Image (tube, rainbow, N blue to C red; front, top):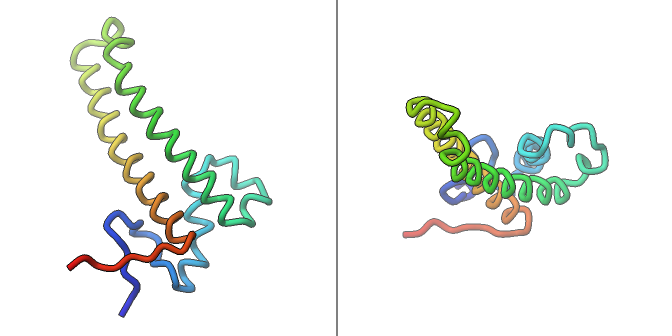
Length: 122
């Protein structure tokens, strides 16, 4: 039987306690960090450091997305047509769901790296 992972676990990352997880987690975390971190040798060598950066970067991205959504009407109402503003808000909402989902995935991966394991709820 395979390892159980909770809802929200990244589809492109194997469960913890597998060799595949250990082999892929650093690359997976790098994909969620600012692109400049691919050139940073020290951070790339330490998955716990990557996890730290990915977690805070994801939190900041969610906060920035939420602030952009909140401010859009106020800042763009006089510059855009009503249809264009509605489109911008719809795009921000859609991408907002993506960044929240990414944050949840990163949080779960960090928990797994700290030894958390989950059991299915009956």
